[in-house]
Image (cartoon, rainbow, N blue to C red; front, side, top):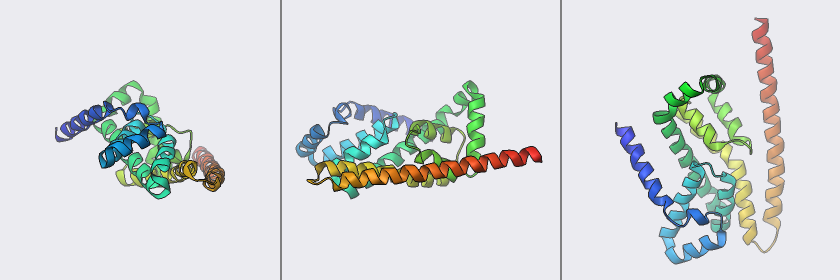
Length: 220
């Protein structure tokens, strides 16, 4: 009951925050700059919390990294984006853990069992793999991880590390928009290419390892 009350309080706070005009303008960097200038520290806090809601309800984290990189430049942009992503993941995970597990296992038993089998072995590497893919669904990963009880330490450490490459890339791009030169934009493009290549290698190794396991199981 204590956890349920805590979740209800969080939901009420989020609903109140959704009533702010920031959510409607979360991708409008010029409007947000004016909002910060008019509201100071409070405006910054509202933008951070609104970014958290945006990601928690399924918004792309790349947009937030780009936006916060533009508003707060590279270091603070990366820091705030990581904080927002981790808190959003914790919110999704907690809601799924306490409220959605039984419902999803009843409605999608085969899919839930399949993800459980996937995540139960080397959960850190599995969550990291899902985080590194730019086309992965962040909210689905959070909810499924909460439902199958992925251990907290592997979940959050893998999430933090997995969020980092794209966060840096898009925060650099956002900071580059403000820069008089194009060096930061070019750097973000180079890092994006390198990140894609490394992610491809990691995925290829995972597939090879998976195939090897299947062949071993068949022989045994």
